[in-house]
Length: 178
Image (cartoon, rainbow, N blue to C red):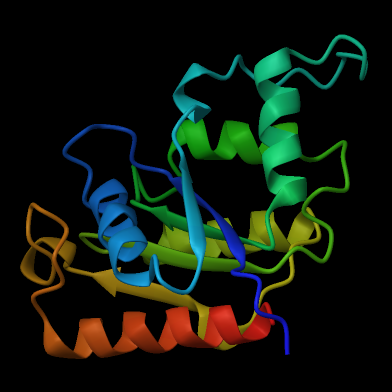
């Protein structure tokens, strides 16, 4: 049995300090600290716009850092809101930078979309992740509609069914990394 704790790279599509998605990740990091090393990657707000014409040598250092972190991680956990029925631009931009690489190919990815509605963003995010080759499982992606009624402003899960579902997602995701 492998006793090494898996490394999760957690990415929030919500970049503000008050983002429910960011706070959910902070909460999950505290809860699952005994069983995994979760790194909350919050630099996507500083990424330049994706440019398909840039050579590998011309790739900005911050993007090389991001791609290296994705490569080193055992799994990726994305928690994202929905903006105008889609993925937030900063998250889409970050994922676009991975298109020319293979860092997401067969990389286990869990997705939580926490929003007022979220269905369109959730579908879009799963499509983008499939396109870049991420390894997705049906039981490690979750849509939390009506997030403000289910999660406190501090990121604590207040809805019992949502708490159970997130716990199941995390346990299944961590099991898949063993």
